Length: 567
Image (tube, rainbow, N blue to C red):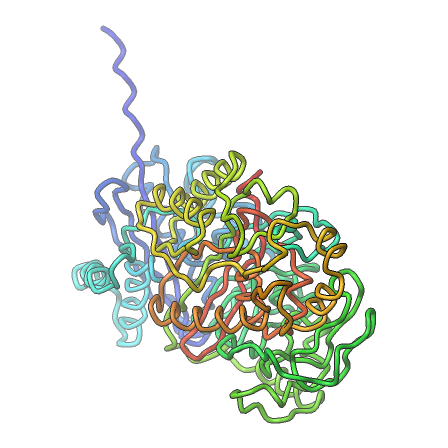
């Protein structure tokens, strides 16, 4: 008798979550096994755990989900989706497990299925509704002195109802099949010496360390005393240094604190004059005094805080910027504050639990994509709104295809908005086609108009218009030769565009396809950095950056100049 063909292994999706009301406090987990094709819930599991931490509860949820899948079919392959960056990264082998309470749980979870049969993916909390509601049902039952019962559960119905009520274009939460978030491990690409031409090279970006919180801190194996803190509860991603999770900062316990991102840049404000090359503008009032000589000169604006917020990215140990916030920025109403007062206020924010109120809701997250290469990009020529409006080169189209594939795997983009210029519309069209989305055009995302400098290299501008170039480098109010657009005008335009888009896409993740100066300006405003910081960022073609905007006006830079998808 002929041998029977082997039965094909089944595939399951496991969504799991855990929570603790106190961390540690009364805790519970929830897990659901789904059919990956139909999205049908095959098994639900939940349990009240007593008093444990969030992380322990999350691991217990993972373990319960894997065991439930193994009971259905021990030969199955499983794809786990969780909103715990900690669990996903540790179980994927990318982060070390240091906490003694989690090591045995992780080891036990790894033994449920043989190696290679389980894959892990991070998803936003909004996409993990089913497991989250199961965990809350278990905690509610425990508070009543009862055990959770599958027959009493309404988690699946509640999650489905929440999906139906989600804004148009948002992917249904518990049935989400997309891959990781818009924030992914970043690569490093060599810079070109800080030349401020708009088609400059790349720079190193950070690596994600901790996820956006619900008023809780994940033990992300960051080292003693290190915290992933922001004033809004967002993850601090894009760090340098050994495990220091503060946004853009090096050192221990340095955090992105008080970055408002909501105010317009302090453009056009006069201060004490532009400091000379290589000097620091220590304690100067007014945020518009750029360091003459721009990038690579060592000039710093230590005392200028763009919008009255502490300078995110300031190195040191738990300290904010050393200078007083600008007091003359128009319309911001920022009171004068000494260096010591700023440090005390920053320390209080770091020490406060929860990093902000828990009811702010999901932020509006802008994933900022610079267009792919054009024929002008490798030559580092000024290419703004007033030039030849070039299309993508063959290399640029390939870059757009690669970023489209990467974003499709991550599965987090809910809308695509592009600058009206040809290179951004073409890039956006390639990505949107892969994601099954339409492209909306936003005039405010266009590149700066570089006037008579369009099509020239930085060296050619230096040779032909030296006085105008020096003025442009020294002041954000200076326009390029021939009546182009100043950086101050660009900043005002981007701030208005940001506010309009944040209102239109509240709680959603949106891809904005734009250019060097607008993307740098989004980042600068979010950090409260002075205008001269534009000359100190490098942005590669087809690179990804990300900024999240919260209901309280806070902003969190999540990613900058990520290019791993191009390698």
